Length: 291
Ligand code: NDP
Image (tube, rainbow, N blue to C red):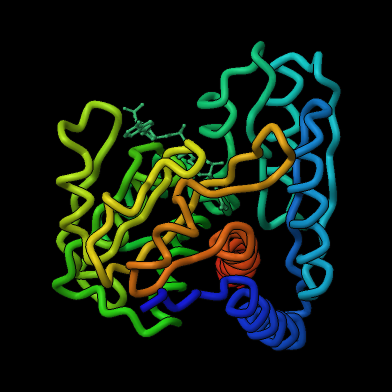
C-alpha cells in the first residue's frame, strides 16, 4: 500500500495561524511588537528567496521584520559590528544571519556573536548546550519542524528506533538530540549515520522513523527503507533540469513506507513556521526580563 503523504504545507499553515494568534495576544498584553532582524550578506539568489519568504511569514503573523543587506565583499569586522548593534537594540528580539556567508567571513565567529537570547536559529553554543541538557530556550527550526510533523501526523516516537541520516550542526545532530530527550515527541532510540557509517542500508532498514538530511538527491532508495517506516525528507536539492528533489527517492519509497514527506511541501514550510515560534519566544523572554 502506498504511503500516507505528510502534508507539511498544510500543517505549517495551521501552525503559522496558531502562532499569529499568540502574537496578537502577546502584542495586546505587552504592547511589544516582536521583531526579527534578518541579515543577508552577498547576493546568492536562493538565500535572497529564503529571506524574503521568512519576512513574508513574519508580516503575516504580526511580527515585524527588517532586512540588513550587506555586499558580498563585506569584511568580518563590519558584520560583527552590525551584530553588536542588533544585540544592543532593545526593539530587536530575534537575529537571523542567513547562511552561507562569503568565504572571507568565519561563520562560527559570527554565529557565536549573536546574543543567546536573540539567537532564533538556536546555533549559539549556550543554546545548543541547553538543548543537550533538555532545558531548551529555543529549539532549532528544522529539527523542531520535523518533530512537529511527527506529532501532527500521529507518529509515536517513544520507544521507536529513529535513524538520522546526516550529522550536521544545523540538522542531523540537533535532530538526534531532540528525539533522544525525555518527554513528549521524543523518547526515541536514536542512531545517527554519516559518510563513514559502514553498511548504511543495513542501519537505515532498522528505522521505524527515518530522517534523511544529507544533501544528496534521491539518495535513499526503496532498499534502504523498512516497509511501513515513517520517512522525513529534509533534503532540498536542485537538479540540472531545474526540478527540486529531496534526499529520498520519493516515488520508489512511497510504495513501501508507512508515511512520507514530499519535497517541496514537507519539512521546508515547517522550518519557516518554527522561526516564527522562536521569534515570539525571544520577544516574550526579553519582555519578561524587562518587567
Ligand atoms: P551538510 O552537508 O552540512 O551535512 C550532510 C551530512 O550528510 C553530513 O553529516 C555528511 O556526513 C552526511 N553525508 C553526506 N553524504 C553521505 C553519504 N553518502 N552517506 C551517509 N552520510 C552522508 O548538510 P545539511 O545538514 O546542512 O543539509 C542536509 C540537506 O538538508 C541539504 O539538502 C539541505 O539543503 C537541506 N536542508 C533543508 C532544510 C529545510 O528547511 N528543509 C534546512 C536545512 C537544510 P559527514 O559528516 O561524514 O560529512
